[in-house]
Length: 266
Image (cartoon, rainbow, N blue to C red; front, side, top):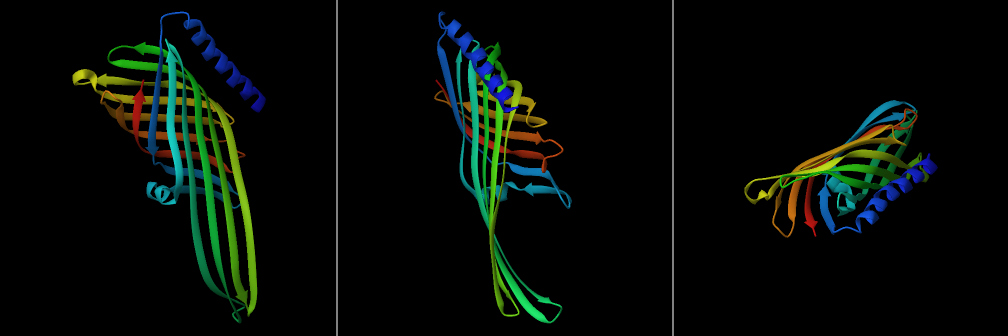
């Protein structure tokens, strides 16, 4: 599968760069764009555990409380109708939970246990795609999007249990790690519709769908922005979903929340 995906990405790169090279003989000029944004999604999903199914849910507030570092941005370049576009979302989360519990064995031997659990999560969502302009007017610019997306997540859990049973001390440190790295091919559209005086207001939109190592991946972005000339600001809502193979411990995963960013074009 990974060999096939590598060939697919190589073919995509050739499909994008060859038309760009051919157009270099014409009168077109390069156009570039960049965006830096913050996206704070609530996270939901369904797990399959040996004891049965379970749902997970992390609110936007919990995401912010656990956030240690994040970088989110896009870069794009176009020459005539063809172009390349990439979007990166990186986030690192950490959280610590403690417990303290008293118990007894057989109602006779007293005991207690204290535990500390440290969870560290690192996630990458990277999209690399070629673009082809479908519509370019004073009011609307729409591009076809075709490429690949990587979802890479690593979860590390460290714990230390200490306590005593009948005066005998116990200590049990441990660690566990789980990770996944899924590549999927995606296709979709992205663009903006301009309106208002001087066409400074715009509606920004993106939708894509794909499959590969995941059974299904899809996302949608819809937002409102204002162009100041030097660049623009954008407020949007972004939803991204994943469905995985039935044999996976994670059955589905979703990221859903507001986005605020600054867009530069040059």
